[in-house]
Image (cartoon, rainbow, N blue to C red; front, side, top):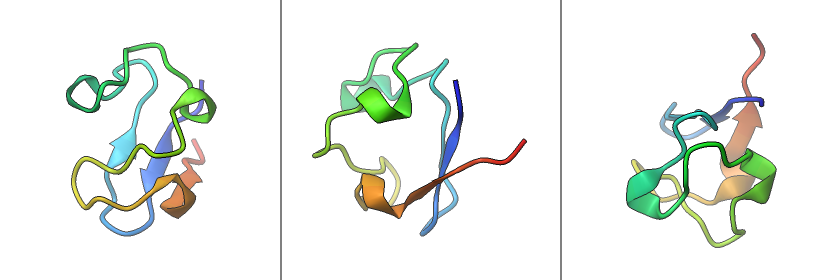
Length: 54
């Protein structure tokens, strides 16, 4: 699964880790995160994330 980076603060969403504090279980693909989820560091929405090129 692809990682995504917040364009505003640089926080990286890693699907293997998820965002347990935000209610996102490990193993959850970015595409499967609810649309109302926000970055745990700066609070922007999913629209402000870009795929990480590895």
